[in-house]
Image (cartoon, rainbow, N blue to C red):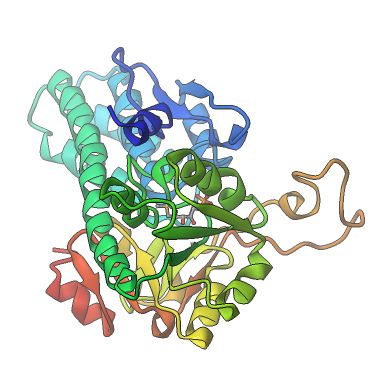
Length: 367
Ligand code: MRU
């Protein structure tokens, strides 16, 4: 096993233990200081882990919800399909209420729901077994999807490398291995480059710290640094300086939901980064599994944006409160980059360019 594979093994975001009684997650709020796994047994523990970002990142949330509903459904004691399904639906709606923006949560739960309905004439034991199988498929497909995103993104990096110098990549938040089942989305091109022999002088990744929850500082720089990729961490407000100095050749970010017109919601700060990239003429790519593309949402303004506790801005991470008591604090967890600012959306089926709705159709997304 290579070093990078060993690292991937150590930080697997979500697993289903052999006894299938719990969902095993990497507790991401403890990173980078502590690498610890926890087992989520009850529906409340699952909900709370998603809400509090113990497991986070759109694809990883989807995989945990899929495993979670399979574990919970396995415990339903019912004598017929209708009473089983009534309880299943209640569990599904409960898990779906944990976070509003990442469409992968609803996508994975709906896929599990469709599976249950398609099996209504089977025995409950068989349904429960096949729900585990479906959740495992969702997880395995995610590995293959990020692999394909990685190959396509690496193609772009190779083009930039032709110019001879180190390729400077900027990323925001964490769309890495711990946000998915394996390679990440925004990080997949970087890991693919590594697997293809790129070394320290071939690429240099600049990670935005990502206020207020510091996913870039705590998670992305932890991942990339451990993987042996040359990594620099900067505060979010330093990105324009790096761009102005010519250090950034390309921006790769993940996303939580892409609307039909290509507007792409991702961690707060993504919209500003896209505007800066446009200003400096730097290609700006969204990396997204096709399950993140929501053709039922017409434009970015229709994407529900999660608002989080103001304490994350005023107090969290500080030894003492850093804002006056009683101050109003604005804390949206996401924003969206307008489609006009996006160079391309890298999906496992190909790279979509504007007009995005047409490109999604041509790539067979949503079929
Ligand atoms: O609030 P988070 O940490 O779940 O936000 C995560 C992001 O914004 C990621 O960029 C996105 O989910 C894509 S993960 C492959």
